[in-house]
Length: 183
Image (cartoon, rainbow, N blue to C red; front, side):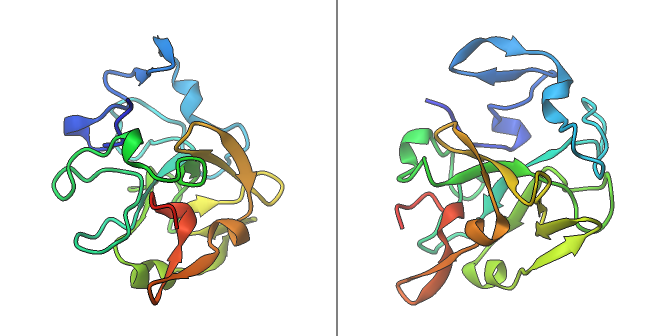
């Protein structure tokens, strides 16, 4: 039962330079797993170095308290720890993607993309940074697609137009790929 808390205090992810995964009892010790060979924008991952997060970013979408929409990462201050069993649609919920920072290379917050409410998520538009299309810190780096890791651990390429499709849920436009609900 893997946890989805990305914050350092309760993290299931990189600690002491190791990535622990329940399906692989050994630890992955090489930092190269955090760097995409096609990534010319971000700095290479360097353990315990500020602003050197590598090539990938995780979803901290829909992190506001008190609404009906939840993203796949836990904010322990607001929700507590989210477990894989809590995700209603693991095969369609985006967890990690090809990423970067839209403002500059190798800067703060390249490790996540985020918005709190449906309104703030819906205000983000697909743009271009250099030769890549992007949506917030999500980048199409591979032949016009984003390498996408879903909560059930499968990886698939998807275009931004597909990932950002909105659906009306109870009168609110939601990008269902970024919620744990079975929308």
